[in-house]
Image (tube, rainbow, N blue to C red; front, top):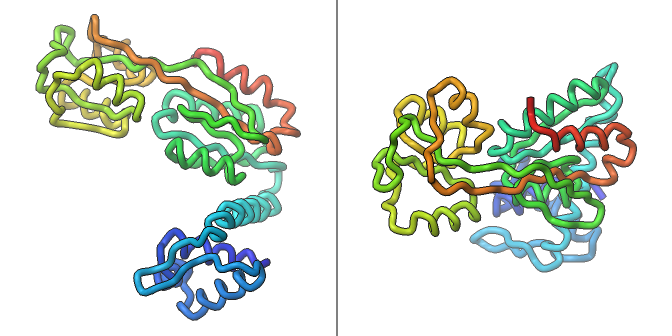
Length: 281
């Protein structure tokens, strides 16, 4: 089985057509068609339904897609490991939710870099759903996420939870009816809890999906928003932000998930995971 054929199949699925896949892979459409045909013949299964509107997965194709991604992911990892520069002996791929980078991701990367000087490190940004998929497909070794799935071959470490706190640039900022309120979307669970607490509030004029951007905007323009305590603390310490008294607080769980095959020879991992459970300094 040819890895290029698998990559072509994935490109067709992700782009939705053989033509767009050919553009992505910089080959002719006839080449894409030939690769797909060869792959289907080697499997003895039709993987895609093709018509004028594009290409869709057959039931067999849907099952095969996961394995295709796993195989191509392992191939990329094998190529990278065999091409490691002199002085590097192994590699680790870390996946991290954007919201967790400031509080845990940067700290995790720093711990690995400082204590494993002979390990190459790749960091990928992804949503909790993407990270879960990448972990299942073997594309990442570690993930930092707010949601962890219990699967065979993976170990889940629950880390200290994070607090979402209402902060304002004015000490006396009113909570109810404040036109300067900035809504920060911290995910589905937060939206549900926030909706219960502020069921009668109007829709915020400004909304962010990136808490760090919301913090920068708020410090520049003024206002109030729910932010991770770890993210806001530096501005609180220098008097630029204030916690709003009596406002509801919310808690989100955080997890470190490791792929067991990757960590099998990591003698350092136990102390590393324990270090992440300690308060940052």
